Length: 297
Image 1 (cartoon, rainbow, N blue to C red):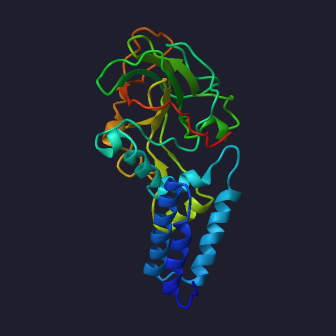
Image 2 (cartoon, rainbow, N blue to C red):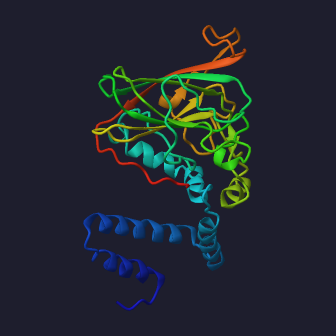
């Protein structure tokens, strides 16, 4: 096909995409070309804007390190991560789900702790937090012997891989659910934090006059054969940014009740007031247990 005008480009490219042998790849590529070319025509993308766009894509890769994933942050800031999550969970997007964003800070091989143990591995000032989790299936039956990988930011808003003052794997740990589907542990109360703003995401947020903050949250990744891996975040409903999460991750099903206690802890003498507690139920769906690829090392 000879191309004479811009209207000739899309049909020519689509004809090539239609020859893709893999049916799912063909479906994706055909739809991608239709939407991508349509977007370019709709906004009348200029040559200068196109060159800037390719420079941004290059920079996303250049900013990637063992402890930072700019591309994941950008996908969250555009709502793409939340859309993919909700479309693929909760019975195909039909129901609420406790599935949530993986985020850019999950690491594999967190140390194992026993139920009732602590995630704190180095001095981490802040109020104590006691978490009790329940893991159930969609019918409400307990999921026993599930592996629960927990991680969260410190009270200064930094994950341990971002902060040289924290020990390796501080505020991270793996537990196993009991026959009743329970797990419990002690840690410190986390705070919300701003995304790093010295890259592509920061420029976008400044251009849109948006704040960079995520509300305080607790990450969990739960694995059990016969179930889809549950990736979740539980958000503090008292956080000032609970309604304006920069990553669009907060859903009604993932808002937790982090209760503040101003009296001494009834069974742990070393805990001074205030301290916090969280009781939350995670719901798993039947499926194949496939771990995601870690976004950082």
